[in-house]
Image 1: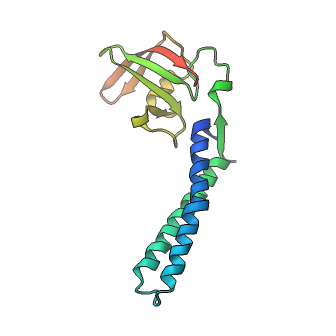
Image 2 (image 1 turned 180 degrees about the horizontal axis):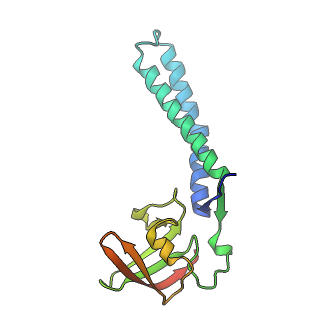
Image 3 (image 1 turned 90 degrees about the vertical axis):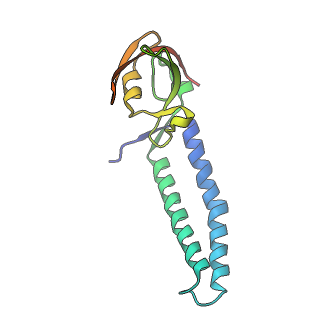
Amino acid sequence: MTTKVPLTVKGAEKLRAELEELKTVTRPRIIQAIATAREHGDLKENAEYHAAREQQSFAEGRIKEIEAKLSNAQVIDVTKLDPNGKVVFGATVEIEDLDSGKTVTYQIVGEDEANIKESRISIGSPIARALIGKETGDVVTVKAPSGNVEYEIISVEYI
């Protein structure tokens, strides 16, 4: 039995859009490139043909990967949950580092959606694991490589 992987609604939409693009735009373009390269004759020394075949292999692999992710996904719409102010998967949390006074805001998302540049952290990350189940005003301790860091939860939003 495969485990369901949590995915936000936005994350699922992004994967579906990429899958649609691969199937309707990328795949036909590559097939056309292969057909054009074949017309040039000898395939052994045809760099265009080999490049197009490589692109095809990559695109087909990505299509299979996305289809597998979507089939194993448990799409969670945080706006439809009633978490009573607690930090849950999909929540956007503003936290303050109690030592430095710096505040940061993160959305807790699935492994595939995590992107620190976009302030989205994986549900499996140490910060997310420390925050889950807590609420505004709670202080959490996160074990970091440089030692323990204490954060206070400033706000929790479900958007």
